[in-house]
Length: 325
Image (cartoon, rainbow, N blue to C red; front, top):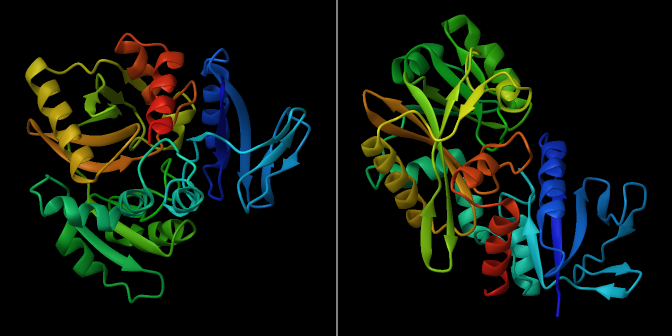
């Protein structure tokens, strides 16, 4: 008997359209011989089952049910493709766990911890994971630019603490640019993290579990003429994303093992993408994405194909893992 799978997309952040692109790819790729697939849009104006592009059917938030032409459906599992709040920061994970509806990805606490860059880095540094120097500031705090530069140096990155897709991120080269960069970051989040700009190649590694086995995908090397891997580089074709990365087998193994170690330390499930800078032959961890992009322009689908899998096979593994919870 086919299982009912709700593919949840959208969200309340600037990434909502990117998430809808990801969710649409998932809906198209899931095996219709095994699953009844239901696209669900979680938007600020409401939660809706979308049987087509024009029809919106409200979702009952009491039990996450919705009406279809075959009657009322409560999903057997949720495929979570939301980037940002409330699908990547623990809110929806806690909701589904209270309803006892299994979902792809990690639990609510691991989601919340990893989505908060400050908290995630603080935990991982205690396990001797290499990370950039960082400085934290909240909206309304006095800004001591001299103290900031003393801690992180120049150039540095100014980032919203809880955001993705490089929204609100600036690379700062002079002390005078800091205030404008902070204003930009505060439009996304009242908490900001300022980090040393590491010098080296950016490489990203997807990791997922298949049952109890933790598997690292072939790494992707990021090459862009932009200041950094910003929105244009990620989604507008302003970068080359080379998979597998043009690095040695030894360094590939080191990166994959580090990504798997971080996955285990943070108690991850499902698919994640860890981003690193290789500086002087050593990987430095930047951040982990627990709901990485799955659209046609995204890194993970490229790594999946490089590993010899189809998206149908890969999304099937993630869905079956959820159903077994």
